[in-house]
Length: 483
Image (tube, rainbow, N blue to C red; front, top):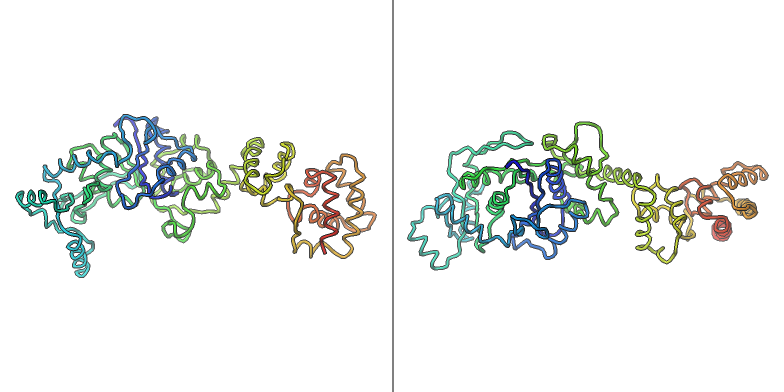
């Protein structure tokens, strides 16, 4: 296992959870840092939870995030197929091998008997429900008769009692379990499909996976996997179990408590660079204060030894901050392309805005937006005339004398030839002096008249971007509408 080979092995149950993205990302970073291979394997053996189209969504989300895998369902690879439902014969073969060696056994217990066993163990307040190995005592003749009769059955792992199961975890160190606390796990279900535990171990071995990097929720299953490696006589991979993702209240991050799908964040306008940057910091840091990363820097600095054991809090404010930072780092030409896409999907699509005009808008708003769509939502006045005027600003800044004052200002603007910011500013100061009022008595109503809002970028920047004709038209309209 000198070559690093890691895998992301999701179940196709609907969407890529941000926790799944974190697992995929850490595997990807580890592979790229160590010149290894990153594999996508789809664990679709739980047919009850399978969702049509989920595989395509998972692949789409991974590729949107830039996590290109070296082997997978739609990529050539010598260890395929990479869909577990296409590998059933392998699992049955290996399960039979365990049965023949006495390391697993047939179980014919009905669901009703298993339920009664669970209820009895609960009444006796046993620490956990476990199968009581009843079918392990069946004779070969009894087993053959039941099999030939077609009685539904499963295959269970034969866990020996009073054993210590020990393994090393890169993140958590040496971990020890008592075999008395490990159930005789089902390996092959009644429908002939394998459980996660058997398929996972068989595939990791056959695909020569060197490191198993997965969520903490799988830590309690690892003893079963270690037993399987031992029973087969296979070399174990290196294990690394990532910390849980938590809500700010320290509860486990779940769909019931908000958006957790990568698709949700993509559709809300988050940049892939920002989301990947944020997810990378959910449980890992390089040991310094750096928080802004591009993917190449993450590859360079990432190590499993720097992953924390404790749960990582999903802080939406930090994600928003990172999105704003990544957005500001983009060139104006990149932002122009992104803004044009946003405009095409908005009510402003009917207008044809020149590149020069949009670049001015971008420059004016760049420090004021965290998402591309906020160029439209925070400054719609660059794309259409105000339809309404902020009530708080009009009540504060639009007095009975304002219409006559602002009309004088409009007329002065109208007399300017190709005005610059300085020309607008000088004209406003001149009118304020002539009216013997402070410039604020004109600036605030002017902003309201041309933008409909009380805040925004510099008012003279807005005037230059809109142009003299549009500015004077808007002032005239405001005088007519604001009461």
